[in-house]
Every structure is written in structure tokens, then in C-alpha cells.
Length: 151
Image 1 (tube, helix red, strand yellow):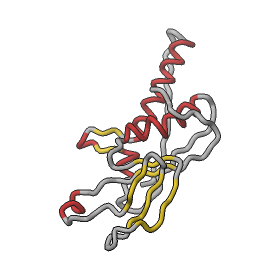
Image 2 (cartoon, helix red, strand yellow; image 1 turned 90 degrees about the vertical axis):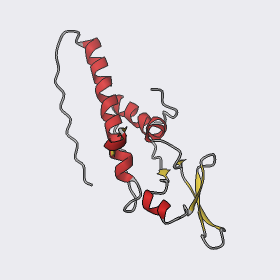
Image 3 (cartoon, helix red, strand yellow; image 1 turned 180 degrees about the horizontal axis):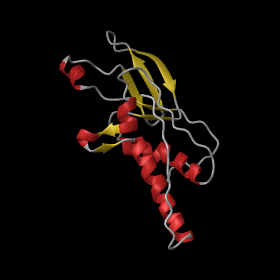
Image 4 (cartoon, one colour; image 1 turned 135 degrees about the vertical axis):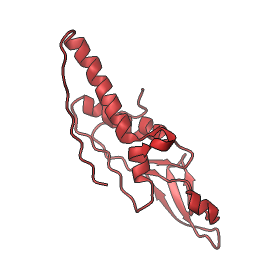
């Protein structure tokens, strides 16, 4: 997988605006955010007047049409690459209840959708297998990674 942005040492603020859930669709709710992925902004739209209220700019904005893989490839994989080069890296999910943090980070097993955590581990282990195979051809190495999750 090729990263689109390999800048190191920067903080990037990325936003994912989730689509409406089944309950919201049933209640005929509307998404209060206007999403502009070209300019990386989201704008709060007043429901009654349909008037734009306040725009917020970010380093990257993802709308409901973007998949977790899109987010991983463009925004998280560069962090994984930096970690594999010896730099510290953090991916931090923050948001209010029901905003999609767990879905993005853990995925949805019912839809066979892998989250960010699964993809990060998959790439780290693939990298380690590849490097160790080149360095230590016939030696078997066991690697243990401990992840602490607070949900």
C-alpha cells in the first residue's frame, strides 16, 4: 500500500462525518453538516432555514461515502510507515457518543469490515515478517504486542 502523505513529525486533524443510522433514516433526519472534501471543511447548516452557519477547516475531511479503508490508506498508513522507521506515532479517535469512533477503529464484524486497529496490526506484522525473513532467513521469531483499549 502506498501512502499519499509521508510527512513526519506533524499533527494532522482528520474528521470523519458518519452517515445517518437506521433510526435517523426512519425518523427522516437530515445530516446537519455540509461536507466539502475538496477544501477539507465541514459547515454546520441550520435545519429550519437551510442556511450555512459556521465552517470548520481540517487537514482532511471524510464524508459518509468514504470507507474505513480510504481513511486508513490516506491518513493512518503514513503513521504506520513512520512507526516502522522508528518514529512514535499515535492515532487518536475522539468524538461524542454515537459519532462512529468504535465503528472506525474496530470495524463491524457483521459486515466483515475491518477497522483501523485491525489494519494497523495487519500492516505492522506484515512488515515485521518481511524484514525478519530477509534478515534472519531460517530463524523463527515470536513477537508479542500488547494493546490497551479503553472504550
